[in-house]
Image (tube, rainbow, N blue to C red):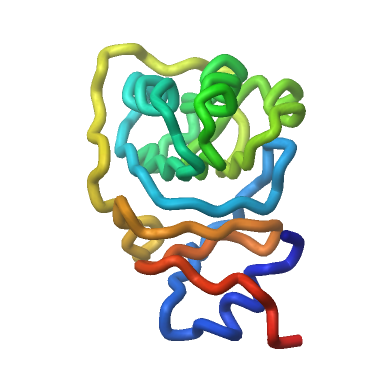
Amino acid sequence: MDDRLPDLCDNHPDAVRWLPIQWQDFGAVSGFEGRIRTVRCYHDNSKVKALLATPGQGQVLVVDGGGAMDRALLGDMIGKSAVDNGWAGVVIAAPVRDVATLATLPIGIKALGVCPIKTQKRDWGEVDVVLTLEGVLVTPGDYLYADKNGVLVCAQPLNTVSDVD
């Protein structure tokens, strides 16, 4: 699954939307894909925790943390829950914590950075809403493809077989 995104961009230029964010990898898996679920939250990861505790069936959770870099929206316990429940990955526009443990988990985790401070628990946030990350729409039910080159989203599943050099 290494370096698939350049081929997907070459083979499907009109279908893919690139999220122009310099993501950092935190899980043990760098290449992952799946149908998108979303959470929008600010300083509260209650909805993230609740959703990742449900059967993921190979889906990917995309989280908009509202630009806050002073609270981690995912740590070791929620990351392990995502693995145990069959999620393919989590893409978080916010920080994570417990990064040494996250690095051992067999799941894709991309985030903006690290913060050791946990969130509040007030059950705030929205689930399965359309997100806008750096001007790109991320819609629940769309598909996400990720590797070390970044993150792509698109409306339909793509043929991921490379035929372009």
